[in-house]
Every structure is written in structure tokens, then in C-alpha cells.
Image (cartoon, helix red, strand yellow):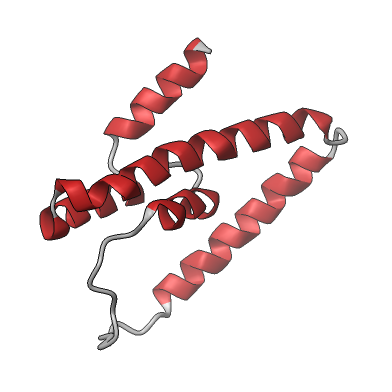
Length: 114
């Protein structure tokens, strides 16, 4: 449990997508309207940690190594997509409201580090 608490502390104070989005949302919409986003991040991360932590020990021996290669391939793919992405983007229909609880909780499955 100490390891988890230390990990949670370190990831909560280092910059990352969640911290950046919370800062931007807090500045743009205020603290009160950003609270569902904050709670969604915290509970979504805990739920993901519980689910993944419960499943990983049950996987066959070589599965983790395969997952490592899949993760490397995914990171390379994402890097190529970012490097070749157009910088000309303006969305007229962008939401003018902060993320809600469920959006933030679901984001943890996309970005488990933060």
C-alpha cells in the first residue's frame, strides 16, 4: 500500500495531461465547475488501478512481454501520427463547458500514467 501511496503522490504533483487539463479548466470555468473533472480523475484512476491490478497476476507468463511490444508499437504509431498531423485546426463547435465526471474517469483508461 505504501508503494501505491507514493506512486499516487508523485503522479499527482508531476505535470501531465490531467494536471494540465485541470489547470486549464480551473482557469477557464472556475474551481467549482471543475470539481467533477477532478473527482472523475481520482475515482477513474483508482478503478482502473483496481481492475488492471486484479487481472495482471492472472495472465499467462509470456503475456506481459507481448503487451510490452504492443505498447511500443502503439507509442511509435502515435508518435508518427503526431509528427505528421496538420497544425491548421479550429473547431467552431468546440464545447464551452468543462469535462464531467464520467469523461474524466474514462480518460484514465486512455492515459493511465496520469
